[in-house]
Image (cartoon, rainbow over all chains, first blue to last red; front, side, top):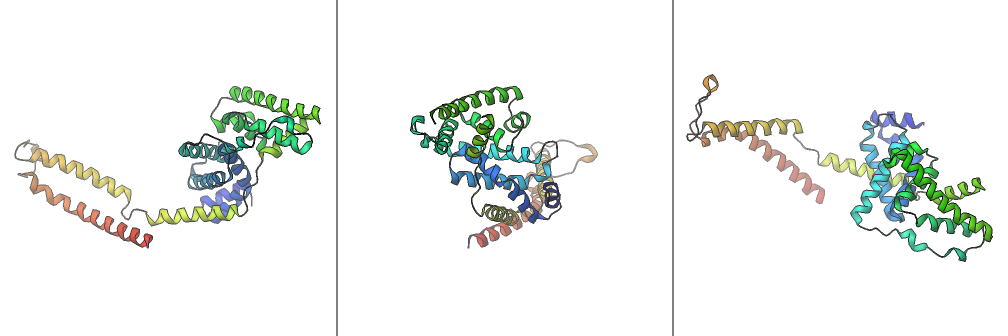
Length: 174
Length: 113
């Protein structure tokens, strides 16, 4: 069943079709939540709430943007709100940080870049995540995060440069 | 090299949703819908809104018609000598409130059992 068909079915009252939407986007929504909240338990709770909100507000989706953009925006703000409500500004992922020189081969390169990613600010990390997750365009990332396109471009460029630097260091070392 | 970097980024960022995520989410939505249905007002919101307006209107009317503040409304004037005489207008409202709260309390009690 296609995404559009599933949306039409849910709006027509066939709520079981929402399974298709959840199946299609669960990994993306979960990944966004995880990047903001930094732990699996909160990310799962947030992803579920995001789908519930999407279900309840589906009739307000006007096809002005992609459904995925609309859904990711819900997920992004749900995660931010949950994080705010928990008043927990420490992202668990940061705890995994280890000095780069401890890594040598390809598998550890991933961990080094991951550490560098976790050192970015929350907003920068989300921009990078959205850009790579579903290969979103700068315009769509701007739409989800409510930033201007030029702002997203600059932040994305800077973040990628930082991450590439770590990646290149690892390339040279290995 | 650029491609290698992009592939690495994708593999780092993409997380797999936990097992049974879909079924848990659908269950979560069903539960919420059930709770929503359980706590749905028995008397529609529109009626409450209309009653609230009527209540405010009658209060103002009763106040203006009380013996202390009587104002001549011309053809619209209704002789109601004091505020207590207007209480009869509020009886239907009170009855509805009683019905709503009784049914809701029963539902809550049932839900808590």
